[in-house]
Each structure stands twice: as C-alpha cells, then as structure tokens.
Length: 225
Length: 370
Image 1 (cartoon, rainbow over the protein chains, first blue to last red):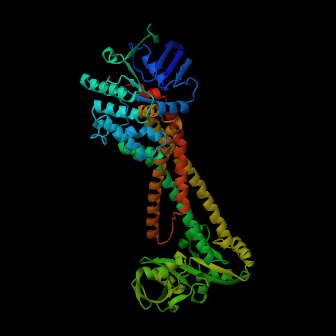
Image 2 (image 1 turned 135 degrees about the vertical axis):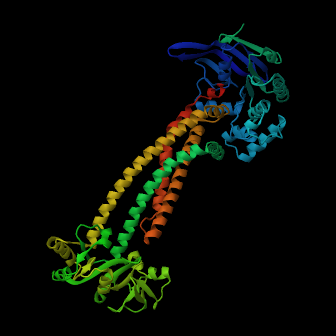
Image 3 (image 1 turned 30 degrees about the vertical axis):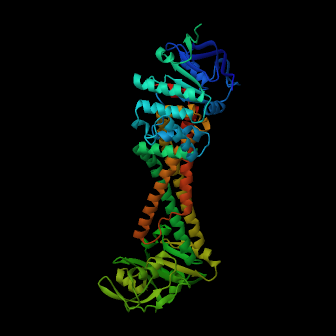
C-alpha cells in the first residue's frame, strides 16, 4: 500500500506549568511515507520525544492536525487513541518497559490480551515472535532474569504482536552497551527489510541514525531546515 | 482479559505478601466482629424461639430484675407458689428449680406437674418416670447420648448414687435435652436449697387469662416478674434490635477503617505501578480495562479478608457452642452472604478513587525514565 502513514500539519504542543508556557513543538510539518525507515535526531529538549508521543498517539497536539494512516487523531478520545495504539503502532522503549511480574511470553502476549484474544492464541503468537528475535530458550524467564539486550528483544517481539503498521522506537539502544546496541539495531533493520513496516527511531546518537535511510533533525520544537 | 488481570493480580499479591495480608487483616477483623456479634443475635433468637415453642401459652414467673436469658440464676421463695395459685384464671402452677451439680445440669420439677414445663409432647422414650425420694433421675436425650447412659445406669451427684430410670424423647430444646430431671424436693435437698425455686410456670385456664395473670403478678408481688410468651418475645425483640444497632455501629466503624486501609494501600500500589500502567496503556489497554483491573484487585483483597474473617468467626462460634452445650452463636448463610457482600462493597468504594487515578494516568508516564 502506498501513501503517507503520518501527516503532521502545523502541529503545536504547549505545556503550561505554573503559568509559564513552554512550546515543545512549534508549528511542525512532517510527512512520513509508508514503509520508510526514519531516524528522528536532535539534542535533548528539541521536542523529538514529544513528536514521538504525538505520532504514537500517546498524546494529542495542542494545535494542528495529525493524520495517522489517514485518520485525524487530534480530537480523539482516550479509548479511541488506545485502539489506534493497539492496532497500528508498536512501541520499543529505552527502558524496555516490560511488566516485572510476567514472563517473556506473557509480556509479549499482553497487547493481544488487551484486545480481547484468548490466552492460548496470544501465547502461540508470542512464542513464534520470541523465536524470531532469537529468544526461544528464554521464553519463560521473568524480565529480571534477562539481560538488557534480551529484554529489548522481548520488547521488540511485543511491539510486533498486533502486526502494527509502524514501529516507534525511542532510544532503543540507550540502555545497552555498544555491542548489544548494534545487535538490537541489526534486528530492527532486518525487521524493516523483511516486513516493510514503517520504522521510526528517535535517538540522539548520530551513528545509529546514520544507519537509517532518512534523518529528520529536530531543533527547538521544529524540523531543522 | 479479565483472566489475565487476575493472573497479574495474584503475581502482585505474591510480590507483596505481607502488605496484602495486612490489608486483608483490616477487613478480616471488621467482618469477624460484625459476623460474631450478629451470630449471637441469631443464637439468641434461635434459643428464645425454641423456648417459646415449648412454653407456649404459659406465663413464666421468675425473680424480679432478671433478664430472660438469666433464668438459671433466678431464685424465689417456694411459698409464693401458693399465693400465685390463688390468682383468678390460674389453672395450675409448676415450680421449677435449676441447679448444676458436679457438672450436670439438673432440673427439679414437681412430679405431679411435670407436663407443664416439659410440654405434652416430650414423653419418656425409654424407661419410667422417677419417684420422689428414691434417688432417681430422668436423663435428657442429648445428656444421655453424649455420656452413653442407658436406663439402669447410676451417676454420682455430691457423693450419692442416683439411678437413671428413664430417658426423655428429643425435644429440640437444648436446655431440656442437655439436662437431667429429678423431683423438685430431691433437688432442693441435694442442692441445699430447701424452700427455694428458680421459677414457676403458670398455666392459665384459658389463653385469654394469661395477660391478666401476668399483670396481677407484676403489680402485686414485689419479688416476682411474670411474662407471657408474647411479652417475652417482645422483650427479646427489643434486645435484638439493640444488638442490631450495635452491629450497625460496629459495622460502620469497621467498614470505615478497613476502607481507608484498602484505599491507602491501593493508592500506593497504583503509584508504584505507574510505569507498568503507563506501559499497558501504551500497548493498547483502555482506561476502562485499567479501572477494572484495580477495582477487581481491591474487591479481591476485601472479599478475601472477609472470607478469612467469617471462617474465624465460624470457628469461634463452633468452639463456644461446644463449650456451652447449646447454640449460643449461629453463623447462618445469611450472615456469610452479608459479610461477603459488605466486604465487596467496601472494596468497590475504596478502590474507586485509586482505580480512577490509575485509569486517568497518561501513557507518557511509561516513557519517563527514572
């Protein structure tokens, strides 16, 4: 399918703290094509995380329109946003964000359980995804029993569970040593090649960004021209 | 979905065993108290209804100033029997003495008039009636069964041998079933209470005379209280009402305290799990799913505590009843249901605020790294 997966038009995000207004995004315009492999880079405070929150439907813009797969999300309710996150977007976080009490399988299966699928069905899919990320021998371990690299692999498997259009990775190698970080990036790259899913990586690591096809550089809440 | 949440919840309980238990303890104590107090009310009303069935139509006369359930310690002068007999409308008066000797509950009854107190329906199942002055007794059904007594056995009461000449039919009244009967004069001698009785049962000529007899005795005898079964029922009911007010007060306090404890723990739990909750929302959990999860958790803690409290209360009641030989406290199915529903309600109400807090949590929380 062709077309744009993200279209952002004049997007503002303003935070108000004790009467002081801070603009995290200042009238940003951005289009990302379906199947793209993009890095969003920029120094901390440049608004790249806020941009990712808005694209990931974790947050809505203060002003402007955000089209995700052609649908305007700026005025959607919490539950509608949750549905889009569940169906269209897979997240990979810097700190992996696995649920400590659940095993790798259960963590991966969780999104499907939230969308109402049964335990057996969800876990079967989770197992096949864990095999794909090379964790067939660690599936029953709890996050605390896994290394950082392994935890991030679990998180990647989880992001793929609902077969989303987009993978949004926020500093996916930020908590890993450089060797493990490279392995995770290899995995993500391989994933992009095989599945043709849109992959967006938010990072401040330019070396990592150089591996992607496109780079979007952010500065002061807008894209650097 | 719900199953997964239950699984996660139990993992969470496992991780915080002590905290979960302490939270449950609040509800446990509350429900234990409420259920126990209510079980006494149930026990009393069961006991009284039993009594009333047996003494139906009679006027009970006892020492002034004593409550219905203190009948065993009532003491009145035997001479008053004759005075009561002169009241118009009285057909027959049966004096009764209660005494406990060597652990045996004994009831002394005038051999001529025993059917008044024993009721027409309770006959001798095995053996014969006793004879005055012959050191003979008739055993109540339960009393004989528990001790394995048969007709012809002798038991020792205050150094003297008494022969069991008869065993009564089962009456259903635990006071009669667990006691042994002997002639009034024999018991007076044995207990050293010559000329004293515990109470009189007065049989009116017609049921309509009962109220008049009650009135006359209460007005004219300084040492006596008379009560028809109707007025006994009334006074018991008012006592039960008072107990239910007490239960209500106790229940409200228990609910308030355990509710606060649960709410406090749930608020802490939600705060601790901000990131987990945020992550769940980021991967697609709806607000309602999060709200349900937290509510289910707090209701489970509360109902779990209540079930433990009811079990404890049941054990306590069973123990008391065994010691006291009669159903003092009764845990009815109604009390169990009431305790569980009450706890469920407490869990629901106290979990609501933390659950809403959790549901409103922004998924961005998941991305804030500590």
